[in-house]
Image (cartoon, rainbow, N blue to C red; front, top):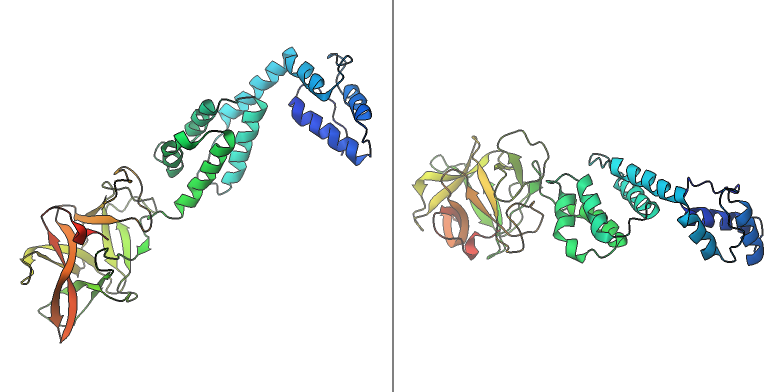
Amino acid sequence: MEPVEYDETIHPVVWLNKIKSCCFKNQITKKEDIMEFCKSMVHPSIDVSKASTFDEILNILKTDALFTLFKYSVEEKLQKLKFDPKNEDHVQFISIFRKYCYEAEINDVERQKKLLLKKLSNDSLEYYFINDNLEKIKSLNDLVVYFNQSFLEQRKLIRFGSCITLKHVATGKYLTSCNFNVKIIPIKVFASQTLSNPNSLWIVSDYDQKNESNPIIYGKSKVYFLNKGVNENIVISKTYKSPSTGNWEVSCILSRHMHLIESDSTNNDDSTYIKSKEIINIRDGDVKFILRSNEFPFTIDNETYQEVVGHEGRVDGNDKV
């Protein structure tokens, strides 16, 4: 490592650390010797001859007029710094962001938070996650931690094209579909005690077919549910009712039917993204029927199944998945 002359294009503390590392590498270990070496590496236009401690050297360097210009130049770099959500190396971005905040001596955490949020898209998960936790962020290190945490949260997101299971909260059974091979019975949807792959797998698809793999937003994203086993889409009938409960029958058909996913948790805002394992309700997008299961059985070929229906009433425990 070559010694670096201080010429006001580097932060004084960063420069001093480099000088110390160079000294240790070259077996210069006495404090007095390191001090003299530091002084010799400062440009003569800055008088550090009277400094007797490292802190005094730093204080002289930081009160020099050109150090203010250095901070302005770093702040300009910070303003120009861009965050590309498609770039997987988000660690590099936040590392540069922290470096620039340090070197521009932007120490106010409130300003740091505002600067970072300006780098993020207002509808991005990173923005939502940091904005929702602003009060918990007390330092620049906290800000870095929450920024990185937002990417871990992304892995929990349900996106268009995600393959999911829907587990009924009240009974622990899975939303399932299969073809019973009975002419008068459509491809039926029911709640199954066992996870029957692929009949219990549902692909959450984009009804508008223009959102690719974007995250799904509570109450806003229009979706349809394609069963992977029967390769047809769930629909709440507007014509046929269940003979046992009088609610609307649920089946699978070829055509797509639009649904909205609504939050059941008071901790989730209807404008935020849906994550795995959150409790939801599924509502028909046209007539507003809500998907429901209960303990009412139906029988086909001597086999008993738990009914799944659509209803028009208030949301209750039987609607949660």
